[in-house]
Image 1: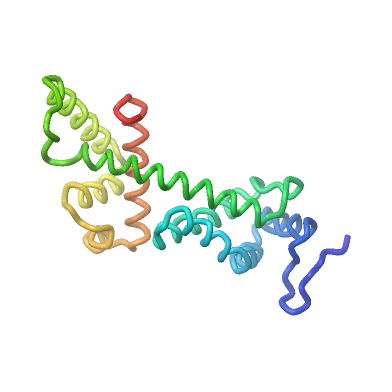
Image 2 (image 1 turned 180 degrees about the horizontal axis):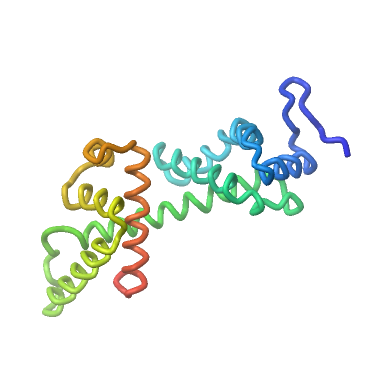
Length: 197
């Protein structure tokens, strides 16, 4: 089988055969294949993410998640179902929408973690509030220590992720990742317990 290659760059072309070859290389652990895909499709993935999130940092996070997902699970892409660029754009769209939903959930979690409850709407509100606060604190206490430390510093200590990184002596990306995972775990737990819609 002849695989179309761009003579100027030596990269595999956009054809279905080219996409299949890239997938095979990824499955074999060829990191150069990922680099080629990243170089070619980063602008598309980033543009989709930016359009949906409206935030450069969030778009960068989504873009990173898309390419990491491809590297970790190259079998998820099925060339027979369509071109790689379409698959990457779809994954970027889904990740961006997930990020928006998580952002809304984080806002609700942040309100629950606030020091003072909102004004009661009825007589049961303070009891419900205390029950929710207890559930949040239990969920936070049950987090793995690195995630718990980051979350406590950020939400109870009022620090930015950069300050969390500095205080814990870790990279900013690691701090963001720990905060993201911690919030996801807390949100999932509160959702499972019926506190979040």
